[in-house]
Structure formats: structure tokens, C-alpha cells
Image 1 (tube, rainbow, N blue to C red):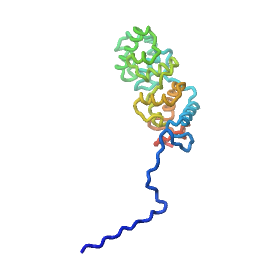
Image 2 (image 1 turned 120 degrees about the vertical axis):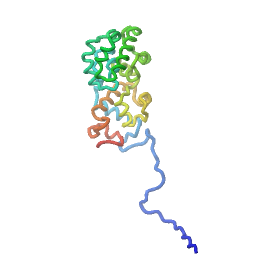
Image 3 (image 1 turned 90 degrees about the horizontal axis):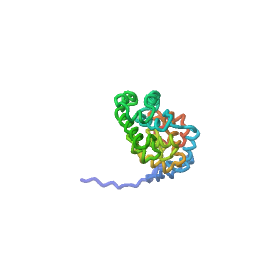
Image 4 (image 1 turned 60 degrees about the vertical axis):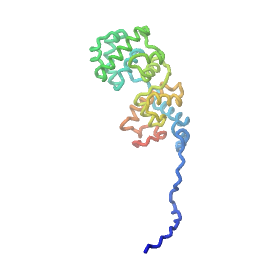
Length: 251
């Protein structure tokens, strides 16, 4: 004999039971935190970040040792996948042996490879350095060109290298240098959600005033090396702490 069906009884909601309605989410550029300067690329927050960087690194500049635009170009090519400190060690003797574009352009490749070997990827870097030097000698009259378009025609030169040379050597703000430090901090500070360097640069150029493009990149690089490190960020020492909502803070 089948049992009787139990009548379902509607239960009254328990006290303090959280609402099942989805919470409203604020957009990255509009939400406001307790710090009062918003989230993401909110203009007030960007200004606060720039102010913090100015306070911490008012004299930030390129760490590559150089005496002229050509040396800066070569050092920047050498810095790919290598620390600036190691590059400076190598170039302290390199530029005495190869003092100008002609010396690099018509160097013995095997000898040059050994000179720059400590910087890594020395074979590819030798090809880039000799190719760029030869083009500078034969097409640009021995002078490093001053435009993004011309610099990008040089072997081994992409936007990052071109921005370093234009900004540091000539004071020309053609864009924002995006190296590994800038890429990491742009993500942690929620200034860009992209991972491609070109897209990150475009994002930063939209929110950073043009007159700050050059020093802003240097400041982020300094901050990335000294405080906001890749593996062990020193959050307790960071003057941008209250502006940052990176989920893996160490303090």
C-alpha cells in the first residue's frame, strides 16, 4: 500500500540569512574604495599613484650606463633577458674596444660574441648589434635616428628599445617603456588587464599624462626592482600599499 505524500511546508527565512540576490559589481574604473580614490583606472586613483611614485622616486632614470644615444641603443639591445648590472659590467670594457657605430658594424662576429657572451643570447645579439650599427652608418650617417618609425627599421629594435632611446637619450615621449617590471606592476596596480606589451603600452598611454610617460616607466622599473618584486613583493615597505588591491599582498 503506497504511503501518503507529505505536504511540503514553506519555511520562513532564517534570521541573518544572507541574501541570494547577486551582488552588484562596480566597474573597474568607477568603484570607490575606502581610500576614496576609486578602483582601476579611476583618474583620482591614477593621480594618487603618480604622486606616490614621484615621492618615492623623484629622480628615477635609466640604469644603463651610457655616454651617448648609440651606447644606450647597444646597451638596451644587450639588456634583453639580462640584468642592467650585468650589461653595465660588460659595456665598461666593450665601449673602449668598440667606440663608435663603425667599429661595431664591421667587427669580427666571433670576437664580438665572446665580448658580450655574459649577457646571454650572444649570437642573436651580435647579429642585431652589427646589423643595427651597419644601418646607422650606411643609412643614417652614423647617427641614431630620432623617430620611432626609423628606429624600428634597425635589427633587434622593437618598441621597448625604441622608447628607451627616444625617451632617455633625446627626451622624446613617443610612448611608455614596457619591460617585465612595468608589465608586472601594470597588472598588480590594475592599470591594464592586458598581457601583450603593445596593448599594455596603449592602455598606459591613455591614462598617464604624456609629460609623465618617460619618468613614469623609470619609476615603475625602480619600484619593481626595489619593492614590488616578482616573487617576494615587499608590501610592508610600499608607499602605494593603500592604493593597491593586488590579491597576493605579503602584508
